[in-house]
Every structure is written in C-alpha cells, then in structure tokens.
Image (tube, rainbow, N blue to C red; front, side, top):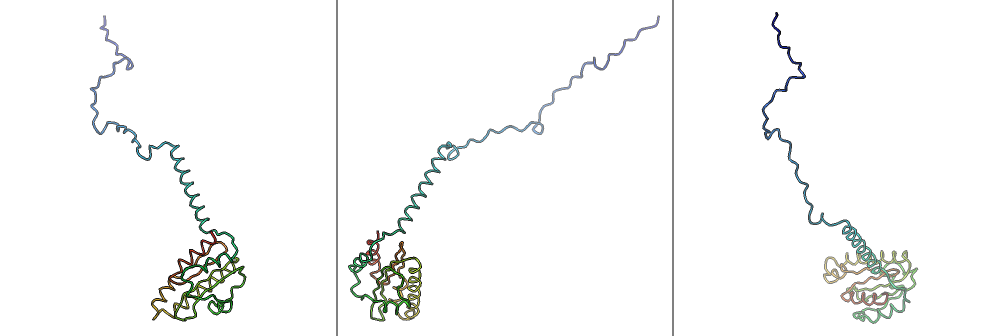
Length: 202
C-alpha cells in the first residue's frame, strides 16, 4: 500500500501568526485632546448682561444728545428783556450804546434783517472793548458774525506789533450762537456780559 500524505490545510483555516504587541512611541501616539479653555472674566458674562450693557450705553448717548440740544437752545424772548439784562451787567458803564450808523462804521455792514440788536463800544481808539447781541434769522446772523470776525482780525493787525493788552483781549473775543441769537464780546468783563445774555434766554 502506498503511504498517505497529510493534506495541507486551506489558507483560510490556518491560524493567524501571533505578532508581539507594538509599544506605542511618542511618534505613534495620537495627539492628546486638550480641554477647551475656560472663559472667565468678561467672557463669562451671560448674554442678558450684554443686552443690559448695550441698553445702558444707548441711554447714555440719548442723555448726551438731549444735553447738547438743550445747551444750544434758547427761549424766544422779547429783545427788550435782553437789552435790560445787558444794560445792568457790570463793566458796561465804560462803553456807550452805538446807533446803526456807528455799528455800520465798525462792522462794515448794518444790522439789517434782525428783529432786535444792540451794540456797545468805546470812542477811544485804544479801547477795543465791544459788545454785540442780535436776534434774527440764520442768514442775517451769519452776515453779522462774519463781519464781526473780520473786524476782530482787522483790529489784531493794527495792535499786533505794539498793543499787548489790546491784542490779548482781541484774541480772547467771545462768539456765541444760541438759537436765533448772536453774541459777540471783547473785553475783561466779557464773561459777565455773556452771563447776563444767557440768563435772559434760558
């Protein structure tokens, strides 16, 4: 009899070779997951706090806008009230009230288109103190203000080289617009005249 040889097992039935476990090295390890950073301080504030801050800022802006409007507003008063307040202001006794012709000589234009106006000045050419208050529409006040500013610049050219006191007063000339009113003043007592003017229109 011929000797029977053992048949070879199919590949699918062969046991898989056992490989030794591979130790993970730093190069093969998956990157560690870092915990999400905790947000603290301002970022931890809930959303409703953001809304509160936003509304607070809007309220502050509204209050500021109201204050600005009120600061530039003026009561509509009869000009005789302003004239009486200005006449009682301190420091005006050294000046004299000017008529329309004298005002035109100083400013180069007549106060036309104004509901009311007053101007004080000195007959002394070395005294640059002046006061002008006018009430009218914007176009008339624009012309008067431009003329007054040009007058101040012309005076500065005259006294720039030798009139130290006059130069300082002219450089501190006050121009103020409130509603339908124009205020212009030069002099040491200009602050008091401005207070008298504002007290009449507030």
